[in-house]
Image (spheres, rainbow, N blue to C red):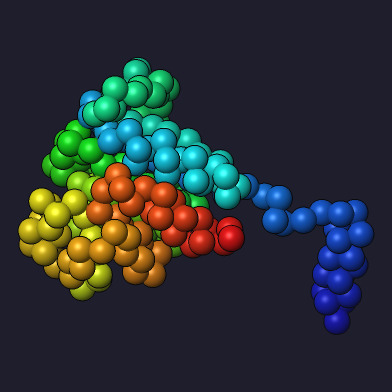
Amino acid sequence: MRKIALFLLVFVFFVGAGFSFAGVKKKVLMIIAHNNFRDEELFVTKGVLETCGAKVEVVSNQKGVAKGMLGKSYEVDKTYRDVDWNAYQAIILVGGSGAVVFWQDNILQSLVQQAYKKGKIVAAICLSPVVLAKAGILKGRKATCWMGASSQLKRYGAVYTGKWVEVSGRIVTAAGPFAARDFGRAICRLLGYR
């Protein structure tokens, strides 16, 4: 009974003080290839996430200026190995032709698998859903990707749908740059934003 009374007292205090959990920003980690990430998949998705209220950090497989396929760039000061993945509610892999470097990256695949097991939202767009498939988290699940990589998803047990965006539990996959805005919105909804 004392615990309930104490909880109610603390709750009333915070509500009376104007405290709101809605103001707490969810943290999102976006991972791009150092060379030839897809510009829209980074910048459009990132913009949607920030507009809905998330705090976004961008990392790569190398530090320095990462180059997009269409000419944009992003200054990266950390690699995906330098950050504490436990600090984020969502992990997003950006696509582009450079993303194929991650297809053979066993460390990244292991980190993605661990993040999913810990209850994180895991998302990938374009060629990057192959990383999720190779990490074993798409087996038996509906997923999508760039059409040219669909055979890779199927090879690792995913049910390829060909949709622009596919949501399966805490996993979001998208087909390419044309789906970047809807991809970002789907992740926002899973984070609890409207």
